Amino acid sequence: MQDSPLHDGPGPDSEPQALQLPQVLVLGTGGTIAGVAPASSTATGAGYTAGVLGVEQLLAAAPGVQQHARLQLRQLCNIDSKDAGPDLWLQLAREVQAWRARPGVAGCVITHGSDTLEETAYALDCLLEPGEPVVLTAAMLPAAALSADGPRNLFDAVRVAADSSAAGRGVLCVAHGRVHAARDVGKERPARIDAFGSGERGPLGFIGASGLRFTRQPVGPQAVRVALPAAALQPAWPRVELVCSHAGADGALVRALLAASRAGMLQPPLQALVVLGTGGGTVHEQLQAALDEAQAAGVRVQVVPRTGPCEGGEFDGLNAVKVRVQLLLQGLALA
Ligand code: ASP
Image (cartoon, rainbow, N blue to C red; front, side):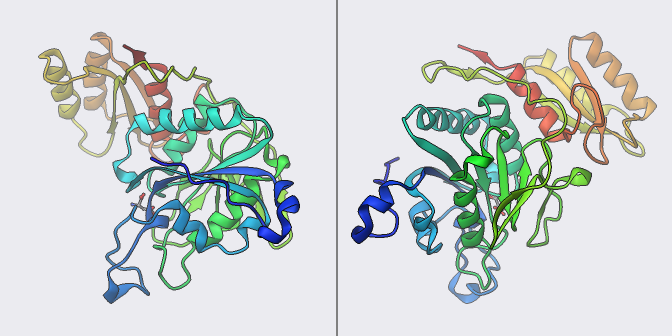
Protein backbone atom coordinates (compact mmCIF):
# COMPACT_ATOMS: atom_id res chain seq x y z
CA MET A 1 0.00 0.00 0.00
CA GLN A 2 1.01 3.56 -0.64
CA ASP A 3 2.46 6.05 1.82
CA SER A 4 0.79 9.40 1.87
CA PRO A 5 3.15 12.36 2.15
CA LEU A 6 3.80 14.09 5.42
CA HIS A 7 0.85 16.23 6.38
CA ASP A 8 2.26 19.45 7.64
CA GLY A 9 0.75 20.94 10.74
CA PRO A 10 -0.93 24.30 11.09
CA GLY A 11 -1.05 25.07 7.35
CA PRO A 12 1.09 26.42 4.53
CA ASP A 13 1.38 29.86 6.15
CA SER A 14 3.13 28.44 9.16
CA GLU A 15 5.53 26.00 7.50
CA PRO A 16 8.47 26.60 9.87
CA GLN A 17 6.20 26.08 12.87
CA ALA A 18 4.85 22.84 11.37
CA LEU A 19 8.34 21.52 10.80
CA GLN A 20 8.98 21.76 14.54
CA LEU A 21 6.08 19.49 15.40
CA PRO A 22 6.75 15.89 16.46
CA GLN A 23 6.54 13.41 13.58
CA VAL A 24 3.98 10.66 14.04
CA LEU A 25 3.28 7.73 11.75
CA VAL A 26 -0.38 6.64 11.59
CA LEU A 27 -0.83 3.06 10.42
CA GLY A 28 -4.35 2.04 9.40
CA THR A 29 -5.50 -1.56 9.74
CA GLY A 30 -9.32 -1.28 9.73
CA GLY A 31 -11.88 -1.95 12.45
CA THR A 32 -15.08 -0.17 13.43
CA ILE A 33 -13.15 3.09 13.58
CA ALA A 34 -12.98 2.74 9.79
CA GLY A 35 -16.50 1.31 9.56
CA VAL A 36 -19.37 2.48 7.40
CA ALA A 37 -23.07 1.88 8.06
CA PRO A 38 -25.80 1.56 5.41
CA ALA A 39 -27.51 4.87 4.49
CA SER A 40 -30.66 3.79 6.35
CA SER A 41 -28.80 3.55 9.68
CA THR A 42 -25.87 5.94 9.40
CA ALA A 43 -26.82 7.73 12.61
CA THR A 44 -27.03 4.63 14.80
CA GLY A 45 -24.36 2.73 12.95
CA ALA A 46 -26.45 -0.44 12.96
CA GLY A 47 -25.42 -3.08 10.45
CA TYR A 48 -22.11 -1.38 9.66
CA THR A 49 -19.15 -2.95 7.91
CA ALA A 50 -15.79 -2.63 9.64
CA GLY A 51 -12.62 -1.68 7.77
CA VAL A 52 -13.89 0.43 4.89
CA LEU A 53 -12.49 3.96 5.21
CA GLY A 54 -8.83 4.77 4.70
CA VAL A 55 -6.68 6.26 7.43
CA GLU A 56 -6.57 9.57 5.54
CA GLN A 57 -10.38 9.83 5.81
CA LEU A 58 -10.22 9.02 9.52
CA LEU A 59 -7.79 11.86 10.13
CA ALA A 60 -9.89 14.25 8.09
CA ALA A 61 -12.64 13.69 10.68
CA ALA A 62 -10.31 14.66 13.54
CA PRO A 63 -9.82 18.40 12.94
CA GLY A 64 -7.02 20.02 14.86
CA VAL A 65 -4.88 16.91 15.00
CA GLN A 66 -2.33 18.58 12.72
CA GLN A 67 -1.74 21.15 15.47
CA HIS A 68 -0.10 18.40 17.50
CA ALA A 69 2.00 16.44 15.04
CA ARG A 70 3.30 16.17 11.52
CA LEU A 71 1.66 13.04 10.27
CA GLN A 72 2.68 10.38 7.86
CA LEU A 73 -0.10 7.99 6.94
CA ARG A 74 0.12 4.41 5.82
CA GLN A 75 -2.68 1.95 5.18
CA LEU A 76 -1.44 -1.55 5.96
CA CYS A 77 -4.72 -3.38 5.48
CA ASN A 78 -8.41 -2.66 6.05
CA ILE A 79 -9.99 -5.56 7.90
CA ASP A 80 -12.38 -6.45 10.69
CA SER A 81 -9.92 -7.31 13.46
CA LYS A 82 -11.86 -10.48 14.33
CA ASP A 83 -10.25 -11.80 11.13
CA ALA A 84 -6.71 -10.74 12.00
CA GLY A 85 -3.87 -13.25 12.02
CA PRO A 86 -0.44 -13.27 13.62
CA ASP A 87 1.35 -12.24 10.40
CA LEU A 88 -0.18 -8.78 10.94
CA TRP A 89 1.79 -8.48 14.20
CA LEU A 90 5.06 -8.99 12.35
CA GLN A 91 4.05 -6.60 9.59
CA LEU A 92 3.16 -3.89 12.10
CA ALA A 93 6.29 -4.44 14.16
CA ARG A 94 8.46 -4.07 11.05
CA GLU A 95 6.69 -0.85 10.06
CA VAL A 96 7.20 0.59 13.53
CA GLN A 97 10.82 -0.52 13.65
CA ALA A 98 11.54 1.07 10.26
CA TRP A 99 9.82 4.28 11.37
CA ARG A 100 11.77 4.42 14.60
CA ALA A 101 15.03 4.06 12.68
CA ARG A 102 14.40 7.39 10.94
CA PRO A 103 15.99 10.41 12.59
CA GLY A 104 13.86 12.61 14.76
CA VAL A 105 10.56 10.70 14.74
CA ALA A 106 8.31 10.90 17.80
CA GLY A 107 5.90 7.97 17.79
CA CYS A 108 3.41 5.83 16.00
CA VAL A 109 -0.38 5.32 16.10
CA ILE A 110 -2.12 2.18 14.89
CA THR A 111 -5.85 2.30 14.16
CA HIS A 112 -7.25 -1.17 14.84
CA GLY A 113 -10.47 -3.05 15.43
CA SER A 114 -11.42 -3.31 19.07
CA ASP A 115 -12.11 -7.06 19.05
CA THR A 116 -8.51 -8.25 18.95
CA LEU A 117 -6.70 -5.03 19.82
CA GLU A 118 -5.43 -6.55 23.06
CA GLU A 119 -3.76 -9.42 21.18
CA THR A 120 -2.01 -7.13 18.69
CA ALA A 121 -1.01 -4.71 21.44
CA TYR A 122 0.57 -7.45 23.53
CA ALA A 123 2.27 -9.08 20.52
CA LEU A 124 3.85 -5.72 19.65
CA ASP A 125 4.87 -5.30 23.28
CA CYS A 126 6.84 -8.54 22.94
CA LEU A 127 8.28 -7.73 19.50
CA LEU A 128 9.33 -4.09 20.01
CA GLU A 129 11.86 -2.53 22.33
CA PRO A 130 10.29 0.02 24.66
CA GLY A 131 11.13 3.29 22.95
CA GLU A 132 9.21 5.96 21.09
CA PRO A 133 5.49 5.59 21.90
CA VAL A 134 3.44 3.03 19.98
CA VAL A 135 -0.26 3.67 20.56
CA LEU A 136 -3.17 1.53 19.39
CA THR A 137 -6.62 3.02 19.17
CA ALA A 138 -10.08 1.86 18.11
CA ALA A 139 -13.73 2.84 18.22
CA MET A 140 -17.01 1.30 19.24
CA LEU A 141 -19.12 3.25 16.76
CA PRO A 142 -18.52 3.44 13.02
CA ALA A 143 -17.15 6.62 11.53
CA ALA A 144 -20.35 8.51 10.65
CA ALA A 145 -22.55 7.43 13.58
CA LEU A 146 -23.90 10.12 15.92
CA SER A 147 -21.31 10.76 18.65
CA ALA A 148 -18.82 8.53 16.88
CA ASP A 149 -15.92 7.91 19.25
CA GLY A 150 -13.29 7.23 16.57
CA PRO A 151 -12.26 10.83 15.78
CA ARG A 152 -11.69 11.69 19.44
CA ASN A 153 -9.83 8.46 20.15
CA LEU A 154 -7.61 9.03 17.12
CA PHE A 155 -7.00 12.65 18.12
CA ASP A 156 -6.01 11.54 21.63
CA ALA A 157 -3.85 8.70 20.33
CA VAL A 158 -1.85 11.12 18.14
CA ARG A 159 -1.35 13.43 21.10
CA VAL A 160 -0.04 10.56 23.23
CA ALA A 161 2.23 9.28 20.43
CA ALA A 162 3.65 12.79 20.01
CA ASP A 163 4.35 13.18 23.73
CA SER A 164 7.82 12.20 24.90
CA SER A 165 6.49 11.41 28.39
CA ALA A 166 4.75 8.37 26.84
CA ALA A 167 8.07 6.92 25.64
CA GLY A 168 9.58 3.84 27.26
CA ARG A 169 6.30 2.62 28.78
CA GLY A 170 5.75 -0.23 26.34
CA VAL A 171 2.94 -0.43 23.81
CA LEU A 172 -0.12 1.60 24.80
CA CYS A 173 -3.82 1.67 23.99
CA VAL A 174 -5.73 4.96 24.03
CA ALA A 175 -9.53 4.96 24.13
CA HIS A 176 -12.20 6.97 25.86
CA GLY A 177 -9.70 9.33 27.46
CA ARG A 178 -7.72 6.54 29.09
CA VAL A 179 -4.23 5.27 28.42
CA HIS A 180 -3.79 1.54 29.00
CA ALA A 181 -0.75 -0.74 29.06
CA ALA A 182 -0.73 -3.54 26.48
CA ARG A 183 -0.26 -6.12 29.25
CA ASP A 184 -3.38 -4.99 31.11
CA VAL A 185 -5.82 -3.80 28.48
CA GLY A 186 -8.85 -5.82 27.46
CA LYS A 187 -12.17 -5.30 25.73
CA GLU A 188 -14.08 -5.66 28.97
CA ARG A 189 -17.46 -4.11 28.08
CA PRO A 190 -18.21 -4.97 24.44
CA ALA A 191 -21.62 -3.27 24.42
CA ARG A 192 -20.42 0.03 25.85
CA ILE A 193 -18.67 3.03 24.38
CA ASP A 194 -15.99 2.79 27.12
CA ALA A 195 -15.30 -0.80 26.16
CA PHE A 196 -11.67 -0.98 27.24
CA GLY A 197 -10.42 -1.49 30.75
CA SER A 198 -7.29 -2.57 32.56
CA GLY A 199 -8.94 -4.76 35.19
CA GLU A 200 -8.12 -4.06 38.80
CA ARG A 201 -4.86 -2.33 37.89
CA GLY A 202 -6.69 0.45 36.10
CA PRO A 203 -5.30 2.61 33.30
CA LEU A 204 -1.76 3.97 33.27
CA GLY A 205 -3.10 7.47 32.81
CA PHE A 206 -5.53 9.83 31.18
CA ILE A 207 -5.64 12.12 28.16
CA GLY A 208 -8.08 15.00 28.10
CA ALA A 209 -8.51 18.73 27.83
CA SER A 210 -5.63 19.30 30.22
CA GLY A 211 -3.30 17.01 28.31
CA LEU A 212 -1.63 13.71 29.12
CA ARG A 213 -1.22 12.60 32.70
CA PHE A 214 0.27 9.30 33.82
CA THR A 215 -0.98 8.20 37.22
CA ARG A 216 0.93 4.98 37.72
CA GLN A 217 3.90 2.98 36.45
CA PRO A 218 3.48 -0.26 34.50
CA VAL A 219 3.49 -3.29 36.83
CA GLY A 220 4.21 -6.97 36.31
CA PRO A 221 7.09 -8.55 34.46
CA GLN A 222 8.28 -6.85 31.27
CA ALA A 223 6.87 -8.37 28.11
CA VAL A 224 8.95 -11.37 27.06
CA ARG A 225 11.07 -9.97 24.27
CA VAL A 226 10.93 -11.97 21.04
CA ALA A 227 13.35 -11.00 18.28
CA LEU A 228 11.57 -9.68 15.21
CA PRO A 229 12.37 -12.00 12.31
CA ALA A 230 13.72 -10.57 9.07
CA ALA A 231 11.06 -9.90 6.45
CA ALA A 232 12.67 -12.35 4.01
CA LEU A 233 12.01 -15.28 6.36
CA GLN A 234 8.69 -17.10 6.15
CA PRO A 235 7.06 -17.34 9.61
CA ALA A 236 5.85 -20.80 10.60
CA TRP A 237 3.44 -20.28 13.48
CA PRO A 238 2.89 -23.14 15.93
CA ARG A 239 -0.62 -24.35 16.75
CA VAL A 240 -1.68 -23.12 20.20
CA GLU A 241 -5.36 -23.77 20.97
CA LEU A 242 -7.63 -22.55 23.76
CA VAL A 243 -9.88 -24.96 25.64
CA CYS A 244 -12.14 -24.31 28.59
CA SER A 245 -12.90 -26.24 31.76
CA HIS A 246 -16.59 -26.12 32.67
CA ALA A 247 -19.34 -28.26 34.12
CA GLY A 248 -19.23 -31.52 32.19
CA ALA A 249 -15.89 -30.83 30.46
CA ASP A 250 -14.96 -34.42 29.55
CA GLY A 251 -11.80 -33.88 27.52
CA ALA A 252 -13.31 -35.08 24.22
CA LEU A 253 -12.21 -31.90 22.47
CA VAL A 254 -8.62 -32.32 23.63
CA ARG A 255 -8.56 -35.99 22.56
CA ALA A 256 -10.00 -35.07 19.15
CA LEU A 257 -7.29 -32.45 18.70
CA LEU A 258 -4.60 -34.91 19.73
CA ALA A 259 -5.89 -37.62 17.41
CA ALA A 260 -6.11 -35.22 14.45
CA SER A 261 -2.65 -33.90 15.21
CA ARG A 262 -1.15 -37.39 15.42
CA ALA A 263 -2.85 -38.39 12.16
CA GLY A 264 -1.31 -35.41 10.37
CA MET A 265 -4.73 -33.85 9.83
CA LEU A 266 -3.83 -30.70 11.79
CA GLN A 267 -1.26 -28.54 10.11
CA PRO A 268 0.68 -27.30 11.94
CA PRO A 269 0.37 -29.99 14.61
CA LEU A 270 -0.72 -29.17 18.13
CA GLN A 271 2.12 -27.60 20.12
CA ALA A 272 0.39 -26.10 23.15
CA LEU A 273 -2.96 -25.78 24.88
CA VAL A 274 -4.03 -22.79 26.95
CA VAL A 275 -6.67 -24.08 29.33
CA LEU A 276 -9.19 -21.65 30.82
CA GLY A 277 -9.58 -23.16 34.26
CA THR A 278 -12.41 -22.61 36.69
CA GLY A 279 -11.77 -20.34 39.69
CA GLY A 280 -8.11 -19.55 40.01
CA GLY A 281 -7.22 -22.31 37.52
CA THR A 282 -8.85 -25.60 38.53
CA VAL A 283 -9.72 -28.18 35.87
CA HIS A 284 -12.48 -30.81 35.65
CA GLU A 285 -11.00 -34.22 36.47
CA GLN A 286 -12.10 -35.69 33.12
CA LEU A 287 -10.58 -32.83 31.17
CA GLN A 288 -7.45 -33.14 33.32
CA ALA A 289 -7.07 -36.79 32.28
CA ALA A 290 -7.12 -35.74 28.61
CA LEU A 291 -4.65 -32.93 29.31
CA ASP A 292 -2.31 -35.44 30.97
CA GLU A 293 -2.43 -37.49 27.75
CA ALA A 294 -1.66 -34.37 25.73
CA GLN A 295 1.27 -33.54 27.96
CA ALA A 296 2.60 -37.09 27.69
CA ALA A 297 2.45 -36.63 23.90
CA GLY A 298 4.68 -33.54 24.17
CA VAL A 299 2.00 -30.83 24.09
CA ARG A 300 2.62 -27.92 26.46
CA VAL A 301 -0.38 -27.37 28.75
CA GLN A 302 -0.79 -23.98 30.41
CA VAL A 303 -3.72 -23.50 32.76
CA VAL A 304 -4.94 -19.92 33.34
CA PRO A 305 -7.99 -18.60 35.19
CA ARG A 306 -11.09 -18.25 33.04
CA THR A 307 -12.23 -15.43 35.32
CA GLY A 308 -9.52 -12.90 34.49
CA PRO A 309 -5.79 -12.37 34.21
CA CYS A 310 -3.15 -14.66 35.75
CA GLU A 311 -1.92 -13.59 39.14
CA GLY A 312 1.81 -14.02 39.75
CA GLY A 313 4.28 -16.22 37.93
CA GLU A 314 5.50 -16.16 34.36
CA PHE A 315 2.23 -14.85 32.95
CA ASP A 316 1.35 -12.38 35.69
CA GLY A 317 -1.33 -9.95 34.52
CA LEU A 318 -1.96 -11.70 31.19
CA ASN A 319 -5.37 -13.04 30.22
CA ALA A 320 -5.79 -16.29 28.29
CA VAL A 321 -5.56 -14.79 24.80
CA LYS A 322 -2.37 -12.93 25.69
CA VAL A 323 -0.84 -16.10 27.16
CA ARG A 324 -1.60 -17.67 23.79
CA VAL A 325 0.05 -14.73 21.99
CA GLN A 326 3.18 -15.20 24.07
CA LEU A 327 3.31 -18.96 23.42
CA LEU A 328 2.77 -18.36 19.70
CA LEU A 329 5.63 -15.87 19.56
CA GLN A 330 7.92 -18.11 21.60
CA GLY A 331 7.16 -21.06 19.33
CA LEU A 332 7.62 -19.09 16.12
CA ALA A 333 9.89 -20.94 13.75
CA LEU A 334 11.29 -19.52 10.57
CA ALA A 335 11.75 -21.09 7.18
N1 ASP B 1 -15.35 -6.22 14.78
C1 ASP B 1 -14.72 -4.92 14.88
C2 ASP B 1 -13.24 -5.12 14.77
O1 ASP B 1 -12.64 -5.61 15.68
C3 ASP B 1 -15.10 -4.30 16.17
C4 ASP B 1 -14.49 -2.95 16.44
O2 ASP B 1 -13.56 -2.51 15.82
O3 ASP B 1 -14.98 -2.31 17.40
O4 ASP B 1 -12.64 -4.81 13.76
